[in-house]
Image 1 (cartoon, helix red, strand yellow):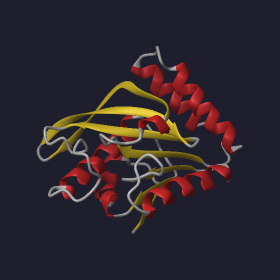
Image 2 (cartoon, helix red, strand yellow):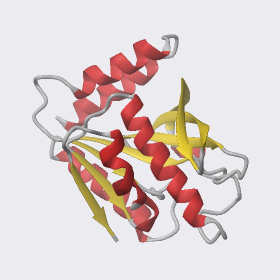
Image 3 (tube, one colour):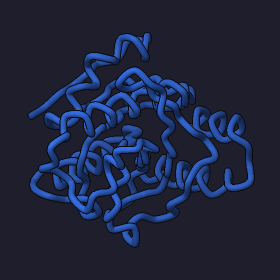
Length: 200
């Protein structure tokens, strides 16, 4: 069942190439809200994912957990930052959406470009901030003087993406300290009830 859902998501990406923003969102929402869906809708928000953006064990956990949940029949989607040196050749069907998500940060609204693709059969959203600090265009994943700002921006933008796309997941799973900021803004953006899981 999991492979059927994955192929439907991939087919939807390809079919939406010439559609407008509203039609694309409607197409993806139909995949999420079907009466035949037996598994849960789980969104993983993380700073790493093997093999495209991996520093340590977190990247392996995201990919392994996503695949395991998918094999159990759950609809799994992953949200990551779009780093400048991600291994893009390992992302299938990578495309920029015609959707721009704005997120409020540090007293201002900033635009974010959204990319979609699949990594080892898992649907992935990559968030590319259009912020003057170039948060994820620095040739490194971690260790910057403003990591707190970088990942709080990403966390907020990830929730804005879910909100604007009309997603109502059963579970939002936040991984490691980089995505703990999601918790503080979740109730404001996603008013529907869902389970929030954070692990360190």
